[in-house]
Amino acid sequence: MKTILFILAFLICENGYAQTTSSSKAFKPVELYQSDNLIVIQISENAFVHTSYLQTNDFGNVPCNGMIVRNNNEAIVFDTPTNDTSANELIKFIKEKLHCKINAVVPTHFHSDCLGGLAAFHNLNIPSFANYSTIELTKANHVVNPQNGFKDDLKLSLGKTFAMVKYFGQGHTKDNVVGYFPSENILFGGCLIKELEATKGYLGDANVGAWSNTVEKIKKQYPNLKIVIPGHGAIGGSELLDYTIQLFKAN
Image (cartoon, rainbow, N blue to C red; front, side, top):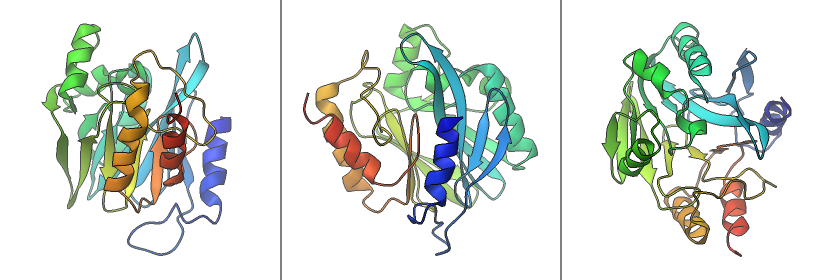
């Protein structure tokens, strides 16, 4: 809950990150849904952060972020909630409260904080898309496999606009991708991007030597981001990319 409150406080500040591209007025974030399993906060006109929880041995009960983007009654979900129960709650929220059809769900890497609820989407015939490396790793780890693969990047139709998924290189894992919503200039960095003051976190599947270079590529590709969503913790702007680059520069 502290993480969620910090997200709200951060966005309400006069920092300009919570602005839509169609308006110069700051968007005030609002919590739209809360249960024991799931929280959904609207962070811009058409983007939302969903947060669920993963119990871990090393880091306790960890809040895990995902992103929803929408346009013209269609939605795309980046990272599932951590389990099927939370995922079903999210799907119901999107359908009943946002009045959107879910076009796709995109796990950004193979860990359970990204695809722990994937079966819930598949059970409702919602297609999933992931990097080919992610599919290979889910098969090797005997977890639910994403249905459709891509190599470097993927453009997903969303109402009258689109969202992008792109692989920039290894970091948190060898398969980590990011999501980008160009109409509002929002990046979902997933676990590849750290919140400010975060530690390096779990490195069991990481390529620490490549991490900074990968994030530098993201910064070059998207130099004017309005909002950056990390896999865990508080959202921000491009300073999250800078922080992550510096965190992994000296190994």
